[in-house]
Image (tube, rainbow, N blue to C red; front, side, top):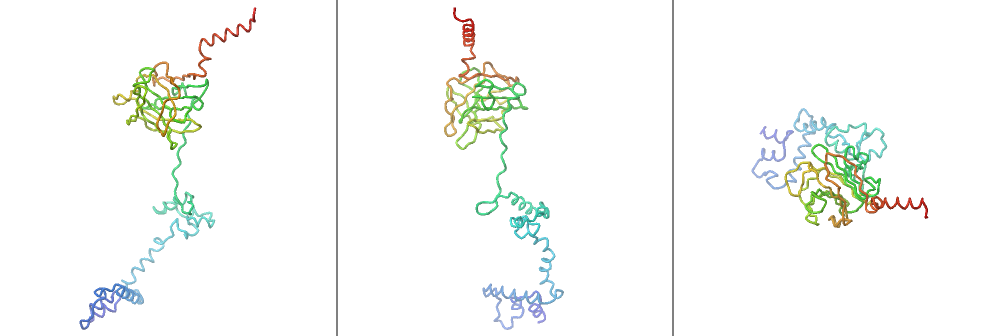
Length: 344
């Protein structure tokens, strides 16, 4: 009977325990056995309150959870950096609204993984229309402009268009330079569609390895690999380009990419350590697919090009070729002499 009284009225006893221990006649049934969880929960709460009403040294098991909570409370219950009630050192949006000048300095930025996340999350200082903070995408590095002053020095260049034009004003511009085991190409053309360079064993279109920068309907500039089958360019899934970047600005398609010098033997990809004729072409695109080039006879290099030799070569466009031909120059000299000498 003493064991039954200690379980029923002690600190850790419960109504169910008292029912099991001192059940008297046989009509007493535990609360859980009767299928009444609400009654059992009420009995447990009543026993817990009765136990905590006694001094802690008499009921250590009942007071232990509360003592642990009190001891760990300052660390476990500290306001998070993102909490509205973070106090003077808070990093939440309302903490900043209070105008605390030293808010950011008062709370360590990297005291915990959660604190780091919350601090960086709210440091973005962007709110949606509904007032919820959200992170933004990292900024995209702008396309570095092509440096024409390096042409003929640290890279080779081809310019097609008006005399004295550069990468932003030529009808077509191409540069190349060696970077380790790669060749870096820069292309630019006055078009809203595509710009390309072909590597050919002759100056004619057909059987050529082609790299093209294509402007699609989403505003992106993609680097694609083609192979000329006669007068038709077939896209090749194997693309040797890497470190690709491109931009469409001021009605110009400009791109930059690298390509390895040596590649496994393939009919559609040439080894750039050999010399090839360079074919230059550009034209419109429809839904990201290239169409026929702008001019019927695209320009080509006068001789084979070696990637190990840097030159700055200018090719006048059709509008300026007439004035630069030898016959035209001779005609101008004759007319000038005639005008100076006067008529007989």
